[in-house]
Length: 312
Image (cartoon, rainbow, N blue to C red; front, side, top):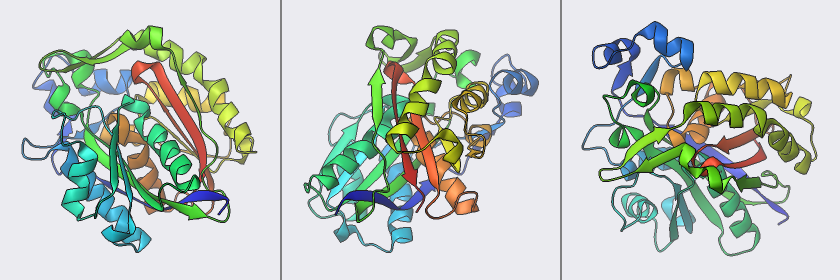
């Protein structure tokens, strides 16, 4: 086999929907204030009895079913998350236990908002190296659990959810080379710190970095896949803020691509945002089998990772 491909995707969101009007009754804000600044209208919020691994397992089960596979077909489970409260067992092991996956390698990857694209690259490398046969790659976060719901600058942003992909060997490369990196000296710009842990960020710093520094990096990820931005059928950026997504997508130059805007309905779900938005595009038929789509994560640690994939 010369490469890997995404065989199927799946996603899951909790049933509870929190609207901007609901938030206006909790903090000093309004629907107009929120939409004008971040573009978000609704978000899904998990209950106290819905831990991160449950969200992840639901999404993973849907991806497995879509691929026509059983838990026994998986030998690597990677969960990208930054909101796992417990340190051990990790979320990957808990997901494997929930799904009945026998003796997989099971690892969590914490690169915050860029976690899924880091995990996808790790699965691609691992399968191509022959160390695994099929991988479940999951992005799952429960941002509501690390949010100060009295802080209107952050609580209006967040949502909970999970997205998953099945990665397997392929005769033709379906996952392009990753381009990844970070700005570690600026790691303070996005934080989940303290006891209890709380999400905080320097919004203007993140906005300037994302809209000025990331476009050439995203274009380089296309080049590594042997494509130009104009060749893309879809662009799925980290769903941080509509006011970041739209200018970033425009500067990348993907003039023929469908641009995911799931942030409007789902909020910022951190590591879940890219697989969640990608799975919805696939489910809706907005992108078709074999279409090239840029997945590009960025955020916490001022880390980034992007690759062009072919749609399942």
